[in-house]
Amino acid sequence: MRFAPSERAVSFWCTEAIYQELAGVIKVQSGYAGGTVADPTYQQICTGLTGHAEVVQIDFNSGLVSYRQIVEVFFTIHDPTTLNRQGNDVGSQYRSVVFYHTAEQQKIAAQIMAEMANVWDAPLVTELTAVPVFYRAEDYHQNYYRQHPDQGYCAFVVAPKLAKFRKNTLFVA
Figure: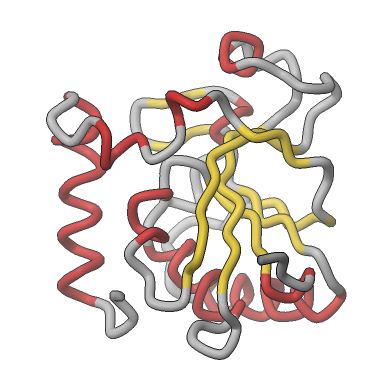
């Protein structure tokens, strides 16, 4: 089934496990966007030289979850104040970015960013830009947490975020 642009969102990679549990989310794909290299590989992305960010593309049913809710979740599961960094991961590929498909999505994301600016102690560094070409990541990156829950990063970083999300949200599937 294909979805209209208003029913698709692209946002930060490694949040795949959380979005997979969000009611109304139909499909989450890990990938790369925003760079200059066509069909980049993970090894190329890791150099930080391609300009891509690691992202997830989310297909969702807008009758069950809104774009606003998708973006609000994004701002609760990562630190939007650290430039080119998320936790121990450093480099432009780890930047905070929201890619929008429509003018309405841009408006909604900008509103949420303005609201979030009052919540965080430091300025937001999240980019807000029109969606570029999305390149699906290699198969071993898809459903990573579900396939590797005992892997160190999954056990010590993803699992606690997922537990916190499950406890604090009304939108869990």
